[in-house]
Image (cartoon, rainbow, N blue to C red):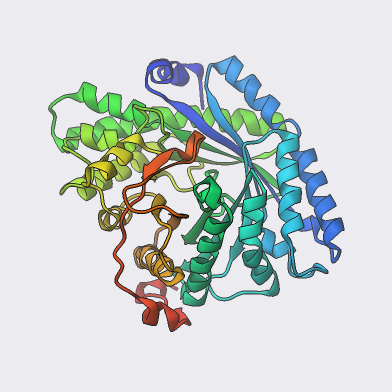
Length: 452
């Protein structure tokens, strides 16, 4: 049972430590919108989103006012759009992305996720149409986010899709080169993508989900950092307990918001995703948590161990606070969205190779990493393949959101503005992997995938 006492404990976290509800995301099934006519499909999709999410923003504002809880983003996720593209009478499905964008603007949400395809074992006609449309769709829309799942632990890695995504990322970069290739910031490549993730750019409303659900993402890097500072010079065992207790309080706040929002909107309660998702605001940083734990700078030796402990403690604390914890839940390490990460890159302590090691123990993967714009598609595919392999072998979600900044070199600064932040361009290892990734086919599933 939730009571207001659970929330009152977090008042200081909210007012002084950047604690917030990062997103209330409404997941909407669009499977009943299918049509052979692309124009009819676009109309049905627009109408359903406009109807289902009509009151989402207003309800979130009322909850903010009544409980004093800041809700930073309101978002919508939809059925992976590739599923709707199999039987339409057009090869170019970009108009559907434009319809999603118009619907998102109509209901007033920040982003809409679900320009997505699940191709871990192969592609259908709809998958191919959607992936081909990604560069045009993301360059022509303001709110649409895209994701492609190229691997699972049970299926292995679809290297044909990995190769395809290397070219897709480059095309997105080129089409928005005048805006620091920002379209790539709305595109993520997954292994083991969760169906109930409320965070962008990877949110979609999975085929195993109900008609309409509310998923809430709660974030509190500042609150965790402050709790660690108050704990002082204690052992790591004691520090883990501090993080767990803090994560519990943060998750209880998310549970309240999810329960209230779903009740008022007539939707199902989906999940609470407790993820320490940073923002560009100073003090709202996962990197600063790691430094508070005792690191001189992120990227040095000990960083992976500290991150592993943080991620585990956050999950343990959060899982006790809600009946439905899901999504990604843990610690995010997006570079451009975390001022502490940006500083570590600028100082040279945080490299792409160290980031990859850190992703083995955090919630997602190589996230909002800016690299030189002159890289090849095969090099991007190799980066994706390495990260996806970590997810497949470790039976966890990993992802790549990499931005080859058009016309930029290592050391240059790019600025996306808003939540996406700013970052130096990181150097990459130029050793070619063309022959390896060019073989195509599927990397078979690991032995431990056979659990039946």
